[in-house]
Each structure stands twice: as structure tokens, then as C-alpha cells.
Length: 142
Image (cartoon, rainbow, N blue to C red; front, side, top):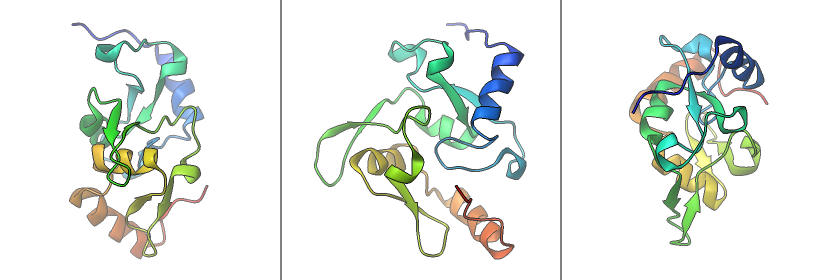
């Protein structure tokens, strides 16, 4: 299956709306050594489209872990729950930072399944966040 074309203008608009940071882990583009991805919130393989309303910015790690997933099983309720939608939902309503600012804690079912499915606290991100905290760059504000 070929990738749908997303124009440069639309890519830039989405990056601006996302404040040039990942919609899931909030890592800023300026902290990564790789370009952010314009990702399909509902993957094409799961029936999603390339309409602007289904696109958002994601770092390569989050987008790679998300893949074609749209749901996960909440470890608290045991129920199948949709992943966080960074275009339609507010990050602060579903997540918070740990006291030391290096781990993302899901505070709702959606937050918990997103942390698990996208591996938002994988060893690479946590290691990097520890360094960012040490120099005062993390956690992000707002």
C-alpha cells in the first residue's frame, strides 16, 4: 500500500498546531535528532483518512510504537479503551508527569492504555528526560 500524499503546507500547519512537539509524549522537535512524523490518528489500515482532522504530529518513537493500534486494554478496568487523540483531547486531562518529571502517568483509562501501548516511558525516553530535567528543559509547560 502506498503512503497517502500530505502536502508540505498541510504538514507545516499541523506542526504549528502541535507546537512542533509530539502529541503523545510532548517531546519537542528541537530535542530530537529526527524529524517528527505527521501521523494518522486512526491509521489508514484501520479505516482512517488523510484528512486534516485525522492527522497530528508524533515523534518517531511514539509513532513506531503506535503502529496500527487504536485501542488497548486498561489494566485497571480490564476494558478495551481508545487511545488518546491529541487533536480532540487535552493532554492534561489524561496524563500527568511523575514527581521527578521523567515519566508520564496515565490518570484515565485512555491515558493508561496510551502510556502502555505507545511505551511512553520506554527506557530511551526516560533516560533522555532525566538529562532534560537536569538542565531545566523538562517537563514541558502547558
